[in-house]
Length: 529
Image (cartoon, rainbow, N blue to C red; front, side, top):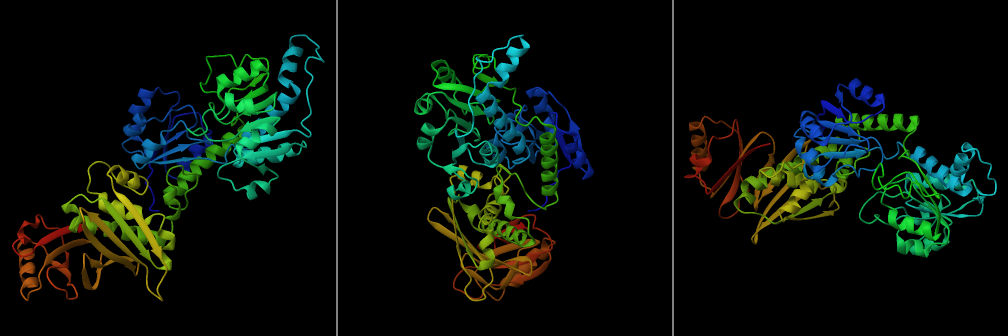
């Protein structure tokens, strides 16, 4: 990936000083402004290339659209539900978090709540402080031999499992992504949710908050559980339906809950907080000194590595960039953008295109399938005024424009070099370009049926024109260009062919207007690569 220029970063919350130190050590100017209102953030953000937040700052579409220079949003923690990722993606802004920074802290708090629920620890403490000695009132139960259901088997879920297994608990779980054989290697028997609910004595959730996980534990779910099941949520408020949880607590279907997160924070409805069988904390999952240092370091180092073109870790919406750091990938990206720009200038600009087919040939191009379509689309769409396409947002922009993109890859045929063929379709017409990389330079071999006698180097000021072959053609074009004060630096003709063919001219500077060429050629286009 080409290095992203980040000169200034705004930190809008209380983040450990290591974040600022690392950024400034790497030449990035840092400003810290906490507790800003939305309108203040909107007014401030236009001056910065990057924004670092924790969970309190709501990075809405209004904030993102106000960030005219914004290139990256860094969340010093896990989850990005306080960031409008779709709005950021549409603007081509990278969103990243620190997926492992608070893993241990969140897992330890989860385990603490499970243990506290089993022995009524907080209630007993408060009773003692009130001057009581109620041994029988706080009768608990052992964790040994009980079943813990873990919904979400990512980093935190895995750490919770290993810790609670040391208490002799049976760990079962569910995750739509983690393979069952992987979770089995941690000692977690993975199963469908319908099979999981009835088996659990305790349930803990460790999923992101998204439409599919909102209200994951609800009236229907609780009804399928053992009577007296106890639940823990240190992930995100809303994964457990709070109204359903209160009803389950009142009926005794749920024997207790440990809650570190709420739908509204701080909660104005205190029904759950005040319930005698609920242990609650003020969103403390990542509130350890170690986690805060780790998250601060991680987000700063991730941003620095990205700026230096070294690596990309923790990206939420820019996975396409993760395979673009090598020199070879940079060559293919430049090729894709260049051939897309050629097609747009020479053919596709005549009418709106609705389909793009990209065919990659050669083993050397196998690793480029993740980003090549995006690179080509950047070249094809850069002329549009409704957005600035980049590798992050261009597929979304194409979809919004009604453009269908298909790609395929085929292995090398003998010692053939990697070749990228791009076809653009518009109202039944097809335009095609065949290209490759030679000596690190993008080259064009064929344009819309015209096969060039030698590869066209896609660098510098390029002029293409379409005409029928004639002895006077080159002389006439050269004279026209000279009249306009433009010198010919290179010229490549097509290798024969009937009718009108495309010719290439490398020129010293772009023509002020292509109108001067119209009497001599059928079509003409120019671009600078």
